[in-house]
Length: 213
Image 1 (cartoon, rainbow, N blue to C red):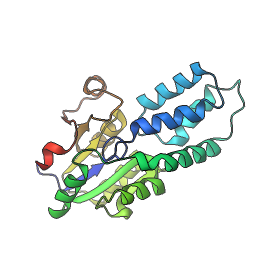
Image 2 (cartoon, helix red, strand yellow):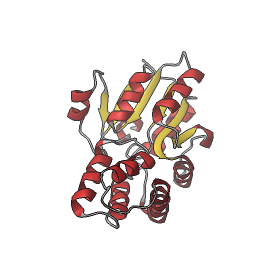
Image 3 (tube, helix red, strand yellow):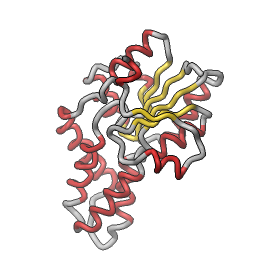
């Protein structure tokens, strides 16, 4: 089917930022807890792509009850500042800018739904010159399922394609009866991880180069 509605995750799908986010989570956690808990926290982050930073820091506090950590909001603010300071290192996924431009010229409807903090995601995408209406770029603290539901309610009869790099992205696609494309160049999971956890036929691409060739 030829999709009219295109929903993109951001980190690892439109931009090469998953490694940076992992480094930032590692750096912050290392200030407060020993290495074994840092590793446990980073593993949780990697296997739960798409969850907000607030949810991830809640997990860190849950496993670190023997240590004195700042509030989840304070940890999240520190994370945001660290990502902003390093954002100059972020670049688009190969072919992503061109593919978004191609869809725009075809009059497709484009949304971004990220687990990242909404204003920060908008700022990074605008700085990288993505031709996407900032009012259609959504993020935390609202969770992804709610964003997907709201988008589907606005476009009830549109065929949809979701592009993601995590199990959560695939589950969100299923929730609105969207097709799914797994973008794996910067993903923390494999195609097999998806196949083992969802009953959905899906496509896989390394990046968007082949879609704009």
